[in-house]
Length: 406
Image (cartoon, rainbow, N blue to C red; front, side, top):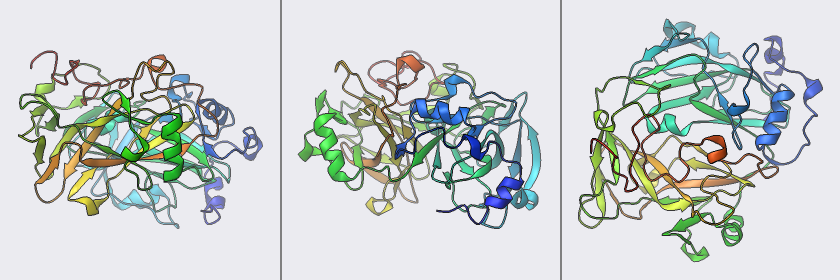
């Protein structure tokens, strides 16, 4: 893709950074890892004006983006076209401006648009992609990044210079947010970074990506189709909690609070039927866990993709980033971390069975092994997870059932 249709206008808008800093990083194909992202910030490919980008915002292969000081409440979602900016489009769509500096509640099923603190000044050969943070998806909060003069969500064209805007739609719960809170992440990349199925097979032999019951899956056991499929865990007795379904009409959740809420005020436990299966009710949000443990080595980044709709009326959504180091243990004592699966059936009730594939991981090479890895060093919330609830709820026991209020 080219920025030729909008480069002049973007530059005129006062985008940050400049050409002078764009040669600071070697032009190596791959997703930019943590150390390269730090250099990209120093070169002002990513900047935030008077708001310094803190070191803790740099993840192993992504950068946390932060909410600005206000939100527009919209009557509907939209996309700009190649001839318009985001703010030109919202003139007829925004009906309220909400101050986020002291926090504000965003209501369910209402689209909001928030200018982000970070802006971009990308080199011509560097593109970006955004995804919700894991905690955002686990709360059924739908987020998408918009950029000026571009008709695709979450994808930022090479050479883009300008502002970033985040559309936020709380689905199951009202949420309280404030300026500076991070709901999504940005990944930078050069060139063709996606691994093909043969490369994934070879990688599984050298650095096992998937484990089942502490054993690395054999190549013949992998389910591949332009990515690596994960299946759902619905095993165990009828009194084992295998998932949670969201309750409607709960009180708002303050996204800045951790371990602050009783799970039972917001979720109903899901138990398996005989034969290891559950029936998903239409348009209800469910949290499940993968049967496989996922291990992402330092030289690889991954992204969960929306499930193929031809496989059933089922959507595993809130495609999210899996950073280098997720489930990884160089000592070999950990056999991956299970992935949280955010699932909604469409239109009709839909049955899901144990070990049924429900999502797919796309694997991407990084331009160099990440020096910062997902895990304890970064205070990562979901390394070695055995539950699928977000960090906002009380601690969970090893069996997936809550430690209290059970």
